[in-house]
Each structure stands twice: as C-alpha cells, then as structure tokens.
Amino acid sequence: MTLELFTAALLIVVPIAFNLAFFELGRAFDYPNILRKEPDEILRRFAAGGSGLLLRWQALLLSALAMLPLAGTLAVVLAAPPGLSVLAVAIGAAAALVQALGLVRWPFAVPELARRYVGAPDGPSGDATRQTIEVVFATLHRLLGVGIGEHLGYLLTGLWTLLVAASILSTAVLPAWLGFVGLPIGLALLVGTLEFVGPNEWDGWPIAGTIVPIAYIAWSVWLIAMGVFLIA
Image 1 (cartoon, helix red, strand yellow):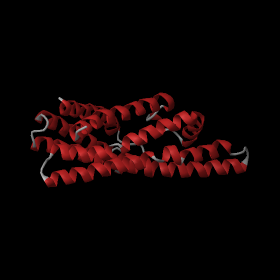
Image 2 (cartoon, helix red, strand yellow; image 1 turned 120 degrees about the horizontal axis):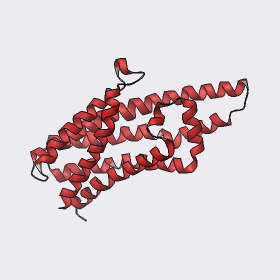
Image 3 (cartoon, one colour; image 1 turned 90 degrees about the vertical axis):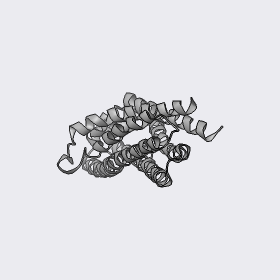
Image 4 (cartoon, one colour; image 1 turned 45 degrees about the vertical axis):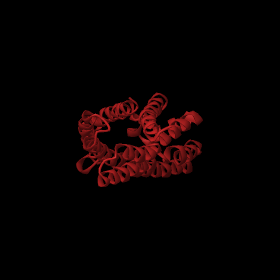
C-alpha cells in the first residue's frame, strides 16, 4: 500500500469511526447532552452503563488518537512548503493529544469515581463521600473536558484545519475547492473555543454550542472527501 492510499484510508476511516463512537455514546449515554447534567445524574448513569459504555468511550478515545498518524501522513502527501508542513504536523499532533487527554478520564478515572459514588452507604458518612466525589468529578470535568478536550481541542483542530486548507491551496495534489471549503470549517471550530470563555464560563455561549456540532459534521465530510479524491 502506498502512502497516498494509506492516508486516504485514514481520511475516510478516522471520521467514520469517530462519528460511529459518538453516535453510540449518544444512544447509550445521551452524549454530549449528559455533559451538562449534574454529577449525581452523570455518575449514576455511567455506573449503570457497564462495560458496554466503557468500550464506547475507549472507541472514541482511540479514534481521537488516530489523528496522530493522519496529521503526519497527510502533510507528507500534500507536500506543501516545509514551514507549512511542519506547522501542520505539530498542530495536528497536538490537537489529537489534547482531544485524547480530554477523553481519557472516561474509560479510566470516571469508572472508579462512579463505583465509589453508587457504593457509598446511606447516612452522613455516605453523603460526605458522595459530596467529595462530586467535587473531584466536577474538577476533572471542567479541566480535562471543558478546558483541555473542548477549548484546546477546538482551538488546535480549527488551526490544523486552516493549515491543511492552506496546504491544499499551495499545491496541486487535491482540488483547490477542498482548500476553500476547509477555511470556513476551521474558522467555525475556532468559534467553538469561546463557548466557555469569560462571561460565558458558567453556562456557555449558546451560539458556539450550536455551531460546533455542525462544524464537526462538516469537518468529517471534508476529511472523507479528501480521502476519496486521493484515491481517485
């Protein structure tokens, strides 16, 4: 298999795998709406999900990590000017890593918290245990989820998208219109970084929350289209 075919396969398989895992989490866990619920509801529903829910989170984590090789091979295949290629690889790898860091709490840290939460006894000692777990969960949720996974994830993914779009426009490997399509998608992802910033820190900025899911669907289709054109 040539590098072009391998890259094309990644461009098609990675977004499909990500969206399948995302869909399965939505079906089994009301993801991502569940993220805005209270810790008590999230932890109890997580504990009730069992191993099937853990496997779904693991699948989403692995699909995020698959962006690491994709960022590298795509830069080689597009063969843009060296500075642009190096920057695209660095930003793309960082985007994959922060997305993974944001997700890794679900298959590894949250199961232990959920077990201890639902297993806490009735009475004052159990109430104190659950309150402590809620604080720990909420802290992980805000730091790894909102801060690293969403804020930095949207920022770096948006920047990588813009760099790939610029790479496409600087070469003749892919049709130029794919580069132009990537520009608004990248900008839309950058808007998502503002969802929980400044005055929106607590409740979020509704416009950004609406734009991001649409942008990620468009981003997925864009990646698949690049893969198809690389094969053609």
